[in-house]
Length: 312
Image (cartoon, rainbow, N blue to C red; front, top):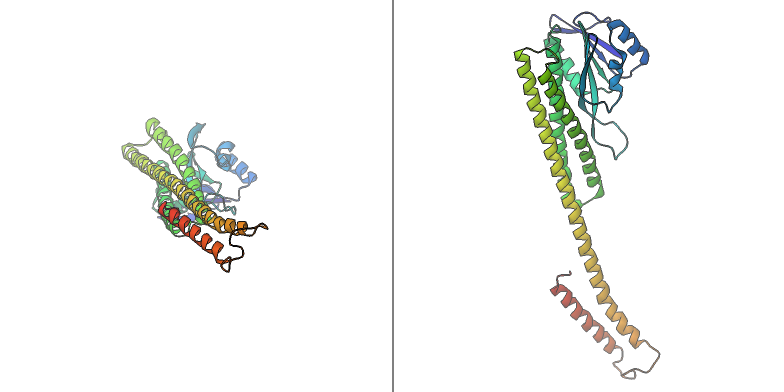
């Protein structure tokens, strides 16, 4: 699906044909015929439009003829029905600058483009470089928002684990850990991309725009640091819970072993007195109480010993 917008008198207007100063947004479902027509109409290399279809496409930029391509990774919620998949993944957005238009290609719908669309009426389409930087800004804001949401969810799951130690919370923490791995990898790639853009001035920015890009680099570095911090905290938490579970298992096995030993002594006494051979006091009127008293005394002595050793 191809959407074409133009800013007319500070109002975002949807138009049918790509004009000068228009923003062309390509969204799923994506058709090869639309890519071919768009490539011929705007004189854009076809591979620039199809690069976003590869979810593993790295952050980069390149130029061919008169078209400039920037690929940057953005976070999005994972709509997979597999319960073991990450809550959030990262997908590439292709930003293409032509002579008079700006094109964005998305393999999935994402919040960054929606936020940019909501503020498009305040943009100056003739300043395409600043529009690209504003898209970068929305992407960084999305990372920050998702990271705060991940941290809040992690805190809730940890509190539930303290109370119950169920497998469901552990599995959800594993999904959060997978999300953070996606974020750390993508943010590191985005940081390198922005640093390279700043160093080479690929977009031809002026001093004010360079300062804005520098602020974006700082924000991406902050988001990367947050993601690394949350990853380390989560890894330490999972290791701690693994140690706690192992320790609890050892304590349970220790108690069960103690109980088994205590119960084995009465069984031993009863088996001895149950032999079909002559035994002392077998004709006594108290022949039943003798093994019972021996069993109870032996069990009490062993229980006292194990309690002294803190096996219970």
